[in-house]
Length: 104
Image (cartoon, rainbow, N blue to C red; front, side):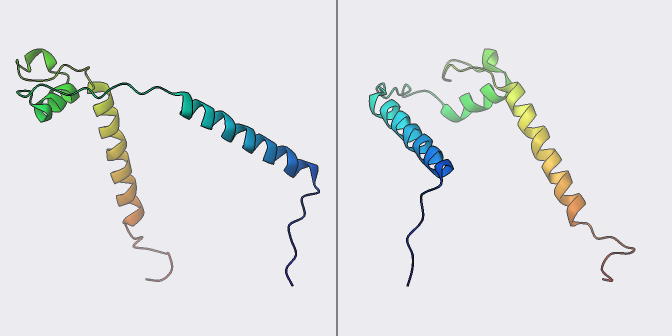
């Protein structure tokens, strides 16, 4: 026979009440949030070129048929450095020790 959970510990009441209150706050914010209408691009705008120029910070030489945007050169370099560090770390972890280890 199974027993039902015991909820007599006051610390579980506090955690449960905080979780329910947080859910109520999130639900109220979500239900009362207003979403604006969809905004599209013009028919002659080259979106792919706009993304490339924005990533490299070259929007001033982009030309007429690109969408206006902010430059993301710093974010592009930071992501490139993080991916490079992850790749080097994975290579370091994947290399086998030629001496010692588990005998392989």
